Structure formats: structure tokens, C-alpha cells
Length: 425
Image 1 (cartoon, rainbow, N blue to C red):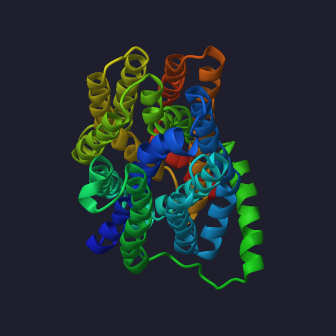
Image 2 (cartoon, rainbow, N blue to C red; image 1 turned 135 degrees about the vertical axis):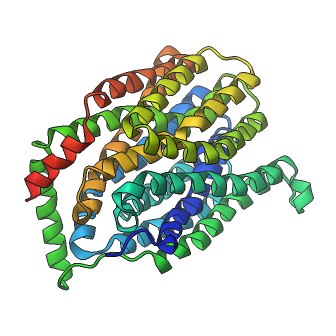
């Protein structure tokens, strides 16, 4: 298959522009605020923190259970784009549905939010798996970084508009902040739907050599999962990276999902916290491209380790901060490394796996990433409940960065790739 055409690269990367609106406006921005003040009205702040953590964990658990099998089925049947479409439009519909959940109906909010997360995370399995189809190895760091960079920019543009509505609803003819947030949820659905179209139109997926019936595809999917599980146990380099990734990405995802909730729990103003998220978006855009360039000219693993070290500083500082300006400084530090660590982890992993098994191997990649997304928010929720102190909860995340860095230092991507090729030959 011909790779690295500009049209297919930018069409693929634009999906990050599309679905990052869900991360910025819903996951990191308005849902935590709305959940505390509207969906969970009159609920203790510590309890609502736990509820939000458990909602994130439940949706991640579902993806953990289905990701490897769906990845194997997608590889066997050439169904990556179809599965991406299915999960994307689940997320799109649930984004819009959040605007119709009533005040105090936290159970309904958790259910709709969990389904939206499933749509978002599920689509990303197959989006990631299409990366080898559009980028040859020498360009994979850049293309992966381009996707995350466009995600920051696109998510930031829509989030800016939504914050404007939130700060000044009357300017847009809206009656209240509540209506502004509800309209923002709908805007995410429209944005995600519109900017997904280039990927569906211009990214080509390699089809299987012969057509297979649905039953054959499913059975082959099960067989390939079993074979991959047996094989991964003997791929020491790949397994070591996946263990390291599982640990450090836990900290990254937990901070993304819980940062605003944590800021509110320690008494910071909600509107100021929302503005801090804009810093992450617009600093994150160039910073992610810089990290991708750093990986090309220096070393991908070293660049990831640098990002982990900065996250450790962020985690410890967050446990002691009191003022909103400190939150802004931390937001800037997060923006410098968040896109870089995500993009380079994806491209580093891509270098170790074969194209024809991409969805299956990315199923395991996301399997571990989403398992981490269960543990991190759950840990913060439980520690906050047990200690009655949200600061202790956020500090507990540091352990994931420390252990992840130790394991990552032992990984050699070239040796890991050789192990995979030898095992598959």
C-alpha cells in the first residue's frame, strides 16, 4: 500500500482535531464542573469526586474487556474504519445527549458520560491502528505528533468558543450558564461529526486477501487474540514497554480526567480553572510538534523519559498548591509534555509492531492504557474518601510515573521489533 501521501496523512491527523473537542469541552472541561454543581447538586464534594472517578473507571473497564478482540476482528476482516465509525458515532450521540440530562440526575449523567467515553476510547483504538497505513517508519514520530498537535489546536478552538458562551451567555442570546454548557455539549457532537469526514473519505485501509463471512471473521478474531496472548508472553521487549506504558500513562490520563475536579475540591474558582484548560490547548499545539522533532533528532525513548520527569514535578507541586496562578503554571507545564508523551508513546510502539497486526496489537496497547485509566481515577477517589483529603489523592499518582520510568529505561525498541518479526516469521 502506498503510504505518506499528504492527503491521507492530514485526513488521518484531522480525526484528532475532530474528537479532541470531546476531551477538552467534556472530559476535562465542563462535565466535571457540571457534574459537581448540576448533575450532583447537593452532594458532598468528596463523594462527587469519587462518583466521577468511578464513572471514568467503569467506561474504561468496558473498553479493556473488548479492545483486544475487536482489534483482532478488525485486522482479520479489514474493518478498522467501520469500527472507528461505529464507536465515533456512539460518542457523538452521547455528547449531544448530555445536554438533555436534568439537574440532580447524576445516575443518568454517569450512564450517558460512560457511553460517550466508550465511544471516544473505542474509536481511538482503530484510529491508532490506522497510523501504520498512512506513515512509513521514518515519518511515524512526526505524523503521530501532528495528530496530537492538531487535536490540541482544534479542541482549543472549539473550547474557546464554548468558554466564551460560558463566561458571557447573554452575548449569544442564552439565558444562563446552564444553557451555555448544554449548547456546548451539542457543539462537540457537531464538531466531532463534521471533522471526522476526511478520515472516512481519504484514508485507505488495506483489505484482506479474500472476502470472509462474518462468522469466519469473528472466529479468526478469537484465534488471533489467543495467538497474540501466547506470543506476547515471549516478546520480552514489547511486554516490558507495555508494562511501562501501562504505568506512566495511568498518571497522564488521571491528570487529564481529574485535574479540574481536584482544583474545585481544593477551593479554586471554576471559571478560572476552565481558562487554565485553554493554556493546555494552545501551548500544547506547538509543544507537541517540538517533542516530535525532538524525538526525530534525539531519541524517542529519551524524550518520553523527559516528559515523565516533568510530570513527576507537576504531581508533587499540585499536592501543595493553593493559588490559581500556581494552577496556571502547572497547566503550562502539562501543556509542554502531555501531547508529546502521548504521541511519542504511540509512535514508539508502532515501530515495534507489524502493519498487518496493527489493530490487534493496538487493541492490547489500548487495553493496557484503559486499564490504567480504571486504576488512576479509582485510586484518587478511594484515597480522597479514606483520608478525606484530595491533596493526598493527587500525590498518590506519582507512583505510576516513577515505576513507569524505571521499566521504560530497560526497553530497546529495535530489539523488541526484531523479536516480533522473528516470532511471526
